[in-house]
Length: 232
Image (cartoon, rainbow, N blue to C red):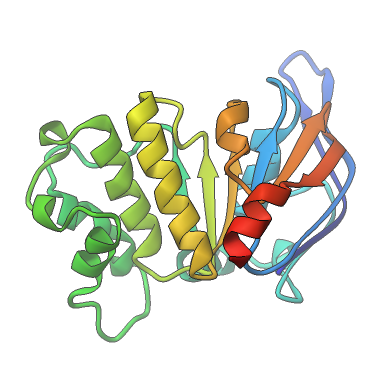
């Protein structure tokens, strides 16, 4: 599904200093994988996630999604591609505070080109166990429930890829386990999931773990226990 080759990303600080966020970075991720990306602060995790989600452009290199060079798309084409193929889950839930869970989940549908959207938001909330909380506003939900609304919003357009950036960073242990169980269940249905985390216990729930340092890939290994669990 994802094939990035020789990606390089540089930034220029106001002082004029050049920052090399990623250097000659290549990575392949197949459809249906469940990948955790780990690394210390400044390792390039967020930069990689932004490039994968078409929220940022590489300075050099190629990004192919199902054989399509998506880095070469125009800004409007990238926005349309994100809406159709990628769902995002963030550490901060980014829910509209005065809007119900159902209405929050509906938002991506308004920017899609689907002919019929009725019932899709309710279906997504039901998939994350919130069928009985559809009319509640974020202030009436726990942190874990708010993140489940955010996951439902990421799912509502039925994307091929879910990108999750520190999705459990604001949650307690119980809520973390609930959210990670949802991701595992989604992966078992064939959904491709890539998550960034600083938590080794969260990373251990993935089937594949990638570690970055200074914008370079330094480790890439499979989790045999999780792989066998999925195959079973």
